[in-house]
Length: 139
Image (cartoon, rainbow, N blue to C red):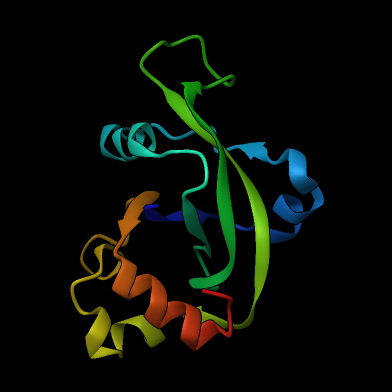
């Protein structure tokens, strides 16, 4: 299993909207960055991810599971763009902010710290464990 981070502006797609989709989940569509798209191509069903609210909140607010591997993004006719489907798993008891992450030396090499603009990014197993602990999430 691999671990990921999915960033979304809450005004565009929020944790509550993701939760409302239930087990059917939702496409992680609209990604127009080649590196983020390529990360989605690496994902497998069952991989886990953090759901991260960007913009004002800048915090991990829950965990998600990949439920469908990369497929054409339904929001465009351009064949270059693909997406995965995800479903919500668990809300963070305590959201973990970007400042919290940057302040923890164990997370100094995290992609989020080094490239905070990338909308889909890998998370190491160690980073996953640390953030789950900080958030009160099931590992």
